[in-house]
Amino acid sequence: MHIKNMENKISIKNKLEKKCSFLEIKSLDKIGRFSGYASVFNIEDSYKDIVIAGAFKNTLKTKNITSDIKLLWQHNQTKPIGYFNLIKEDTIGLYVEGQIMLEVQQGLEAYNLIKSKAVNGLSIGYSVKKFDFNKVKKNRILKEVELFEISIVTFPANEYANITFCKSKNLEETIAEKIKMLETFLNIRHC
Image (cartoon, rainbow, N blue to C red):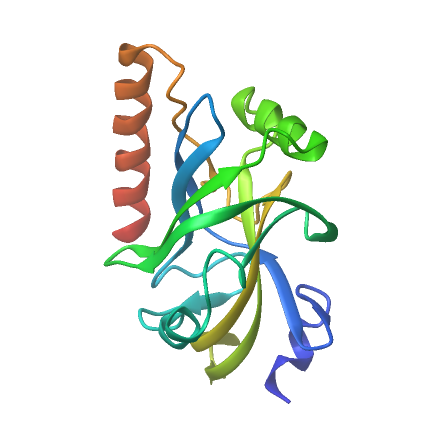
C-alpha cells in the first residue's frame, strides 16, 4: 500500500483520515455563521497530499450536507457543534458555509475561541476513494475523497489556515485582513 510511509503523519482509523488542510475562515458573525475554505486545490499540504478539483464531487452529489457531513469540535464525534448550510467546490477549493450552535456549550466556547483567534483552523475527516502516488515526490494526488466531517481545530497543518475575518470588527481592520489574506494566497499559488 502506497500510504505506508505516511502512517505517522496521517491519523487513520477504520479508513477515516483526519488532517488539517488549507483553510481560510472568511467570516464569522454574531450568531455563529461562518464561511471559508476547508480545502484548497493544487496545493501540497504538510502531509504532502494534493487535493485536485473534483475530489469532493461524488460526496457532494450523494450526501445531504446538512445532516450527513458533520461540524465537529477537534474531530471529537461526541462534540457536534453545528451544521453546514452550504458545501461546494469552486475554482479555489471546497467552500463551506456553516452555523455554529451557540445554544450548545461547546459551540459557544468554539465561537468565542474563533472570535478571539485562539483557535484558527479547520480539518477534514474523510476516506480516500481514488488517488495517484508520485514516487519521486512521495506524495498523494487525491482525486476522489468521501467527506464525513469538518472540524474546528486548534492547530491547522498549514500555517496559512487561519481565521482572517470576523464581521464584528470595524471596516478598516476587515479590509486590511482581506488584502493580507489575498496577497498570501496569491504568493502561495505562484510558488
